[in-house]
Length: 390
Image 1 (tube, rainbow, N blue to C red):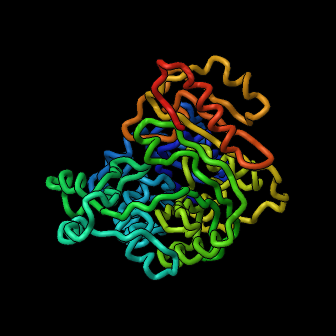
Image 2: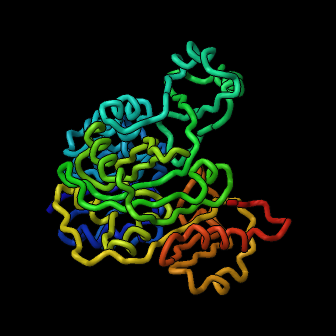
């Protein structure tokens, strides 16, 4: 029997931990959010707001669970660093702070990625940017990013002149400035085991995570893996020291067709990325990733990949939509359609179903991009509707 503590932020029904972890054989404790609908028959539930956890001063029940556990699992982007700090405090096996920072801190990530041959935008610490900004034209487009946030929260894009006005009060150690690269953004998702790339699927974003944080719809459509894709994953993972688990790599292909590295996440992509991935490949990425976190080998399903491509879309909280006929009009395209008339307001930009008024998964023989755009136009067609993804 192993004692397992899981820091959970996502909807556990989508991850289905119990299909990987035997809750009768092991002592399992869930700490975190969205635990209301979980059965506590074979697990302990300790509800808390994960963003408020202080690894050095945990609430008594959580401290006791962590101090005596064999595994501490946290696969949410915002929880990776906290989990590493708790592991170090109680000498729990698993990823350390030094191992997590390269896939969490955007500056560390950028600096280590230089060891690869993959292109990336020019970047500066805020301090270096202040010394070098005069060398850039005033209309030069740049990106301001918080080093440790997620889901594009806090990202700003604009001219060098506009940025110079914004940075005066910012903490120099918390921010990163990058050169803006125009092009199509792709996400590459899959699994690494022992540094070996086991499986990979590429998808093209429909809109961007940045526009989603600003209130527009977001989606993506699967595409054939480009010739550069597997090499980029292997090189970047090696440079960042990431060897085992699911990954979510974002790249931008510029107008000349050259790929540039944006971000590498050592966890499963949000929204419906995992569901679309499973429909295409037969592989449940959440489960494969969990087995890696438990130190177990994951055997890939031998089923052939589907010929069709799958795509997904999601509207953010606050989007005003007319969803009355969308499921009927697009019934031949939908694999899944979720209409949520009363989404709950998230604390930060969220890709969770509970926070979205409308989301879904679609299928097409080729790209799903036009289908996603058509759905977005359909539910935002009225002049009174303000959300748009076009």
